[in-house]
Length: 370
Image 1 (cartoon, rainbow, N blue to C red):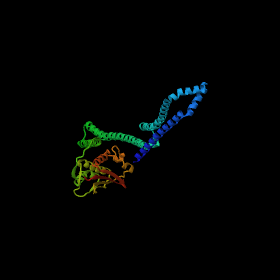
Image 2: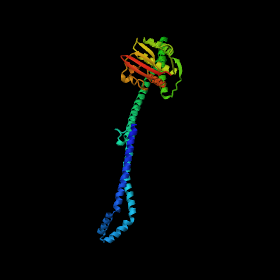
Image 3: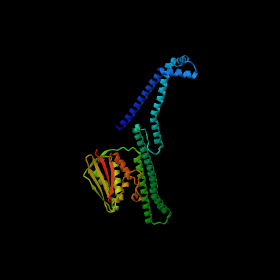
Image 4: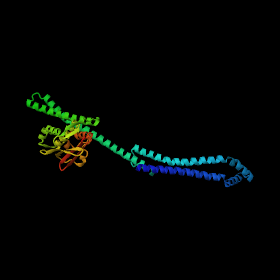
């Protein structure tokens, strides 16, 4: 509505300027016609001829009639055309300044020149939109630069993460090859380490392939009704060996037989990432809690763990695709699981949020109930 009002004012001004130009042309034509047709003009021209050519009044009057009186219609028509041409050129110059202003604004927009775009007051709506477009382009450029930087950081981390287990595997394999008289116990130890490093390398590669697949593919969901309680119980059971290594306890607080319509495989990946994240960053000997809460039209799942508090400035970015926390907090992982989780939850028309304070971190997944 505001834009319509601004454009209405511009139309009114152009209309009034047009009417004013036409009125000025009519007035000028009337004045010139009156001057040409009045006797004062004839007397003045006769007197001018007498003075200029040194002739008598009768001869000057005949000259006037021959030059002007017989061509009066042509002179009036010529005067009308001349007046219209002059006034119309001024009118066009006034009107085209709007297009020139828009063209200058587009140049500023395309050249990414600093400063705000300024247009005539009548074009405030266009000025507002062009400045909005300029600001959006600046933000998009900034986002692109940040995404490029994060991508470069990701490549650097990838190279480092892949190089570490690969270098260890190569070293132990070289030892096995070069040491001819190695004990069987030491051989088994080296083989076990090499196998563990190789499995770690495989996990890293799968992780990066997974984030690429979720980022670049058009994912379609395969909805099915699942028993969410059984799925969470199975998840906790599968994580029990990992929980035992850190002396962690995982407590599931959920009603019996919660039914949820979703893509079971993809949602299981979300819960797996969140629980793995909780295990990785929990203090030894603490408790991880998984709670479910049924709302009116949605279901909320909360994954809570006791560990280092995540700063607020980082808490807002941990779901970004290429964002990675510091090496201390990211040791042992690529930092891409949360990006995958957010992508899956968004496909289900849900949300995932994180809170962290007083060494308690809570990830909340809210999924609409279909």
